Amino acid sequence: MDFPISKYYETWDEESLEAGETDLKGDIYTNWGFSLRELVETIQSEGFNGISQYPITSLKNSIAPCHVWLSTIDPERDYVTGEVTFYTLHIKTTEKNFYRICKLAGLIKE
Image 1 (cartoon, rainbow, N blue to C red):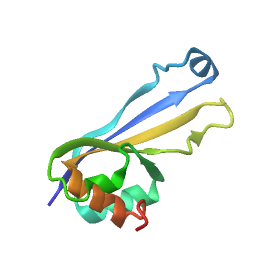
Image 2 (cartoon, rainbow, N blue to C red):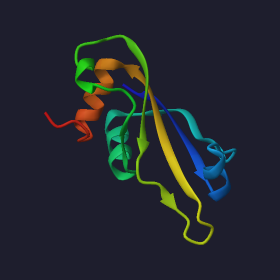
Image 3 (cartoon, rainbow, N blue to C red):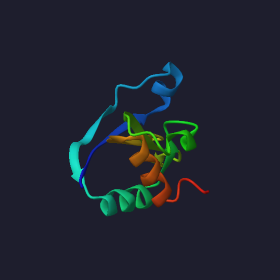
Image 4 (cartoon, rainbow, N blue to C red):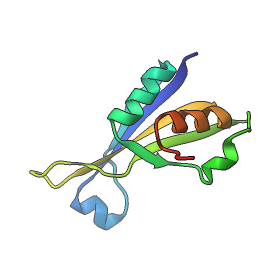
């Protein structure tokens, strides 16, 4: 089973941080098919540890489709320009599958 995954970025410089919004954002890829193994490896290797939906434990048994994503909490830093870049990984799946993915990736400790 492949999961449609989209990855986005937002880059913030000093001006955009002061303004509270950035125009430096976009997609890296959209609706790419990832196997469960590829998805878990991507989550772990790229530092996606912010879960968009809480409490995550309420999702255990729901088969409803959901719009969920994971985000990087620690930004990628450019020490020359001072810019910081955050990434989000959007996963099209059911709530139950999202819960399982997060558990396999080590984001949920139960």
